[in-house]
Length: 70
Image 1 (tube, rainbow, N blue to C red):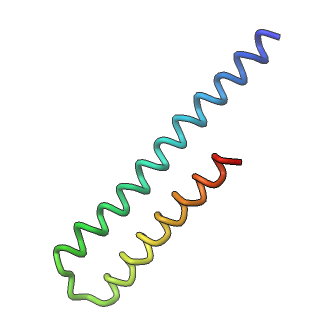
Image 2: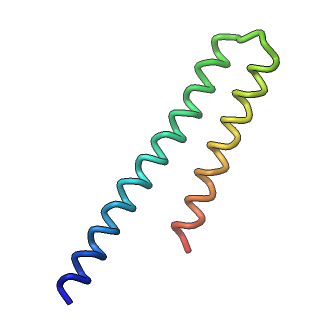
């Protein structure tokens, strides 16, 4: 019984750490987009790439929130 409890606690701790790292990285992606947009990049390809990364980060954060509420 104690081993099961320890394994469950260990798994939960790993999940919480991973979830925090994923959220931090996604927020960093959004912040990076804001900094690059403010730097006025002229390349439309680079703009599209940055916009796609920001959109993906925002959507993943939104989905994580939904999953956490389930």
